[in-house]
Image 1: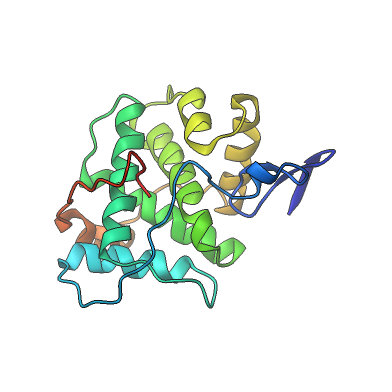
Image 2: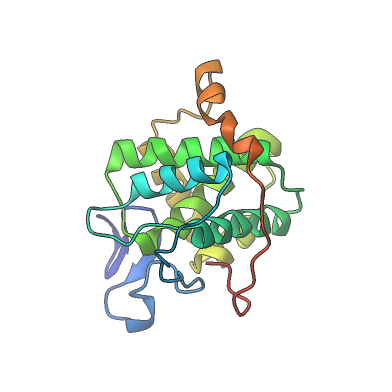
Length: 194
């Protein structure tokens, strides 16, 4: 945990929280994660790969992601990208997941509740590198529920964690290309995406 100022910290996925504020104890309070249903689920190869990657980011003992929470995560990514003024394509999902993998490889596994923060930070970095440097810090800050003034520090910490490795090699594209075949299902859960 890196101290930024008195009583304010950047946690392992870069979200500012105050220790004294109970409403800020959740890493990403805007989204709620559904409890997994342990029934057998039919998922396509792309979603199975996505769920496997997300579950590999989780600390031991955390509840695993299922098809429902996987679809909700992809929908959250789509809504974030659309809020930034871009059309969501499965091609954008490749670097988002790759950067999350690089972050976890460098910093260690995360809690289930930190997944939305990690994914949103990765989306912001993906859009800034692959689409346009004009991605709004205000939009990213509103998704992360932090001050827009803290976004440059949060983004810099994320980039340092992945050692500024934003380029996707041919091997990376081949590894993550199965995500292009993912069939997205729009989910509804009381105006919350995760």
